[in-house]
Length: 341
Image (cartoon, rainbow, N blue to C red; front, top):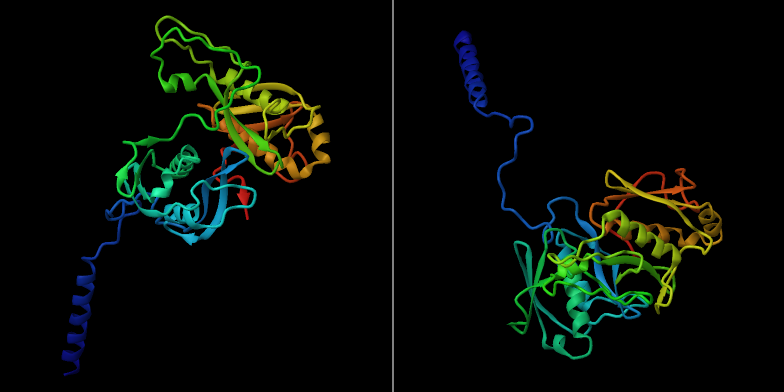
């Protein structure tokens, strides 16, 4: 009898073992089962996001600002809620104040937004459009914005403008195009976008202008021969170091004694070599060090083919300018800047 019971137990465990052999673990590196794709601008599957980049108005300019939000996997919803109904950062204006967000949805690379009739008030409608379009196209994968007012579309599509805060440089020369059909993207290639400081030197503000430092050539066929990357980038750095002379509500961040000693681009990295006067100048103004670094990095990485910026002082790498911001290694474009706690 004991032998029969022992045999029964052995058979039972054998059946369980054989059944278990049919369950195979996923092979190493095997892709997980397919899931519904979600736009990363709307839903994040990974770590929740606790920051958003919004555009407000300061001294007449559109300014990107990083604000903290409660951790969320719906950052676009958080951004829109903050833009339409949240508190306004001190020192800034919000042209969308008083406008109600009725609804929004995302389809592919396009965000459709429906707003209340206050959006059409004559005072600042262009800035309202730009605030909304620049904010939404900061999200990964978003290229177009549809705006409707109480269900009625304004235009077919808004794309992110190629230029921001377009101004006329005091010494800007006039460019005569031989081809009147030159497209907007071709014309935009004759402009620089430079991130100057605001009057308080706490924030950087992007402005686009035609630089007298960049030689624009034209021909009979294409109209414009775009300047090369290094020429544009070097001119942009020179403008930053010299400061926004003659432009209201903007400030230079670099001490007057600082000079650009050398500039070159190699393997997507822009090398900015400045004089040692930079260290001396910022020893008394250490609070502006971070703003200065951000202004150069954001300016240069906005130019095609430049991915990172390496700072040099008299040809040598240094740890920092005034002991606060690490500039030992090349710095990539910043996702979060103009941070307001």
